[in-house]
Image (cartoon, rainbow over all chains, first blue to last red):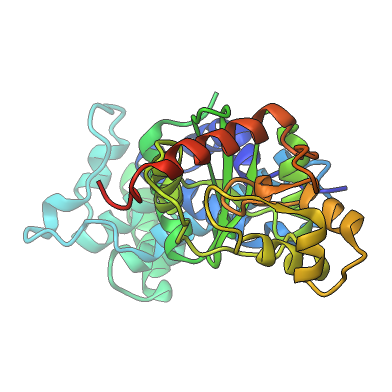
Length: 154
Length: 195
């Protein structure tokens, strides 16, 4: 079976791929991800033996690119390098159950780590990167922060 | 439905920069109908008249060259300009580079010989056969001309029957008649190079 010209593949599936990527990585990064997806696809296209599921093939590439984008974002320091370290990362506003008030009163390093872990849902490598520290130290800050919270909420 | 124009042109730009557009394609209007033009980095590789099935043409190119076929009109700008001037009677000899990949060895020899027939004149199938060194191969020459991948620019329309009958044409006889008449008329004017 002869593969259709890549132009037809692009015309037929580009919108669906872009929509998928907006959902997966957000609107601001979707365009770059989309370009990477389509360029990878174009590069590999002549070697694609089976053209019966081109949409599935494109989505596999798009999914891979979206994972790459998430990883790249994790490696980029989240903007926390505030000149006033006390204000950079804080407990979510508008929660009044007392718990976050306690979090706010934690020492700076513990507060940041706890917020990133539980409000930001970040992994330890991400937290370490965001705080410019090691994973071990990030874990320790979260651990100590939680221990202090437990003590004070008791 | 496809993505907006800016996204598409950004993609095309990057694909070109990375050398991933093996075949650029576009269409243009002409007095002999819409022409489908295709070029590789080497040069113009295919011209198709509008009554050829698009999917068949793309399929042929995808199979023999590459399926990395993208609409990239800019790469074909020089070809379009020359064709426009030709159809206006202001261009006699095409100068754009050609890619012969879609013609077999014999057809290539026939077509190169054909390309030497001057603007506004004709040669017979037999004369072309002599030119390629197969004096008795007039029929084979006819077949090779019929498979010309780059009609108009490679002037297979200038080959007619001995005695003046028009012979055949892959793009249909009305087109052949039109092209010969165009060259006959413009040929009488002073050579129309430039404006």
